[in-house]
Structure formats: C-alpha cells, structure tokens
Length: 501
Image 1 (cartoon, rainbow, N blue to C red):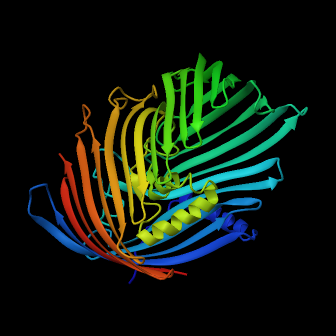
Image 2 (cartoon, rainbow, N blue to C red; image 1 turned 180 degrees about the vertical axis):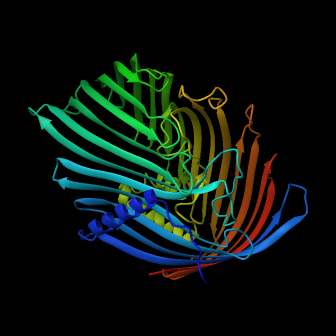
C-alpha cells in the first residue's frame, strides 16, 4: 500500500521533536513504564446524502495505528506520554490515503531540587475548524474537509524560593502555541510571564498574596493583543473547612480598544470542604470584559462521582474554545477518591480503558478553534458510576462564545452557542469480554449569517480480551448530521485487533 500523505505542518514537527526530547528524559528515571501497541481496524461505511435521501455510496476504510506510551511516577521527572500515528486507507473517499497524528503528554521536571521546575504539555488531535461546517464523531474515519489536525503545546519554566523565611516567591515564564494542519485558522502563539509573592506559613488565620503578570497573543489571522495585570489578595481561614478571599488590582489591555485601556479590578472567592469527598468553590471578579466567575461543585462516593462547573472568562484560543473532555479525564475524576496519587491513578485508568476497548484520547465533548480573544461562558455536568460489572458515565454541557476583539465586525462578534450531552455504559460479560454502548448529541445554534446544525450518534461495541497482550472488538455505529448545507447519515461496521507489547 503506497501512502500519498501530506507533509505535517512545521509547528507539528516542533511538537514531535519536543516529545522526543521528553521521551529521552523518561529514560533517566528508574520507576517508569514503557508500552507499545498496534491497533488494526477495518470498517465498512454506508453514506446517505440527507436525513431522508437514498444511499449516496459506501466504502471500506482500513487503519493501522502504532502507539507508544511512557510513564514516570517518581523521581525528578513525573508525567506521561501517549503518541500514536494512524495510517488510513480509503477505498472510495478522498484523500485515498493519509497519516493522522495523535499525542497527549504532560510532564514536570525538577531541574534544581526544590527550586527550578520545567512544566509542559502537548496534544495533537483532530478538531472542527468551524462549528458551522460539517461535523463528525471522533471515531469516524470518513473524510471531512471541516476537520483538521490541531496541535497545541505549552512550556513553562518555574523558579520557586523562600525570602526571609516568611515569603514564598515564584517566577514563571509561559510559552504556548496552537497550529492547525493545512490551514491558518486558529494558529497563534502566546508568550508571557508572572511573578507572585505570598505568605509562607499555612494554616494561619490570615494570608496574603501579590501577583503581577502579562501576556501577548499573536494570531496568524488577526492582530496581536496584549494584557497586563497586578492583583493583591487577602485570605481568611474562617473555619477548618471554609476559606474566604478578597482581591483588588488593575488590568491593562488593548483587546477591546486598539489603544491600551486601564481598568480597576476586584473579586471575592470562597472554598468549602465539609468532607474529603465534597468541594464547593466559587470566585467572582469584575474585569475589563465585565463580570467573570467560576464555580465548582464536586461530590464523590466510593463508586460515584458527580461534578458541576460553571464559568465565564476570556479565552485567547491557545487551547480551542470548548476544551475536549476525553475518556481518560472522565475516569480520572471517577477514581480520584480511590487512588489519590494522580500518576498511579492514570496508570490504572489506562489499563481499565484498554480492557473496555476505549481510546483514552477519544472525546466525549468536542472542540473547535478560534482566531481572536473571546469571552466563553460554559456550564458542564458530569456523572460517573462504577459497579462490579457495570460502569456508566454521562456528561451535559452548554457554552456561549463571544469574540470581543474590536478589530472584528459586528457579525463576527455574535455569540456562538453550543450544547450537547453524551453517555456511555460498559458491562463486563465475563472476566475477558465486555459490551459498551455510547450515545452523544451536539447542537450548534444559528446566528444571523450561519445556519444551525445537529450531530447525533450511537454505537455498540463488543470487546474480547486475550490475556494482557491482545484484544479484538466489533463495533456498530449510526450517525445523523442535520444541516442546511451538507446533511448526511452514516452507518459503520468496524472490526479491530489491538496488540500490546
């Protein structure tokens, strides 16, 4: 099979080089794990042009995905790396052959004991270029001109120390970037830094903090914007379970006006932890874009985890607008009580997902890229339950994204509203086999110039495990995309063989 693959964008080559360097660093630790696997899939797809139209065509899609996973749990380097390269071949669709990267890595390196840390993370995944274009589920291998390979990366050196035995000091530099393959939409680079001073002794009645930070975001399509802020915080430990905080400061930015504007800021916050399994937290801040807030409510039982988050804040686009929620993140939340250590918990979750036949990087909530500073208001509800043989998870979300860059037209600054929900249930038929049902829906509301769309999908997957080295799965999926421009229906049958080494 001869592959006619497009060369990766330069930004993605930089990301892969950075991950190769991180992999070399992993080799220096003793407590580590290295695993490799090959996932081979063959799927048959039937396509229908509209919601009620007749058959449009069918095709076979074959995929081979070699994957390498690295984990370091102790020592100077803590983190994980998961990289896979999918080689895809279509019998009828275009492009006939392509190579798709997948990456998820996070690491923290203690370069100088107790003082200098190097934090970083990177990801490569397919995302929608526009929320109003054709949408498809993550598991679909069918061609979609509105879907692009998006790479994100961030790197942050952190210097920490103690001044006079009573003040904690932290200086941080930040560099982050987003690069979408074969398009300039959303491409940007953000640089900045911060300096923070705070009281050292924990558990005292009062605490204080001073923070100064600044950042610059350069868009390849769009203008460069800058923000700077200085904030003073006073905290009060009102009770063993309740802490309160007030903030005040100033913010300078050229996002809403081409000339820099200065705004006085203030805020309040509270955190209540009545038990190790319960957390209630909220923050309210008056900033240059208006009222910002963040609220979190979490409750965990031995087998159940439920959380609700609500926020309104700016997003510069370095991570997309609606950050994807992956299967890995969902199960990490579920097992937070049983396995407090995040590194050990991730190892257990990855093994569980492999047993269930789930891709840890598959998204339960999608994302899309933006090309300007925007205010994002989001609400999300997540629930997960784990039984002896049955595991269940459900998510629901609603977002509103409004661009606030003064250089954009009034039409481009219209609010973009999305909502959706998803659920999955996995049942262990035997110690080696399981059945997984999944369903999802994503709805994008219309604007004055763009039509609404609605993506619905349901799937059923059977998985049989052969020891710890191999598994086979059969999957059936049906997808309906309603749109005024390019609606379609898709029925897919897929067989997969996963071999681990």
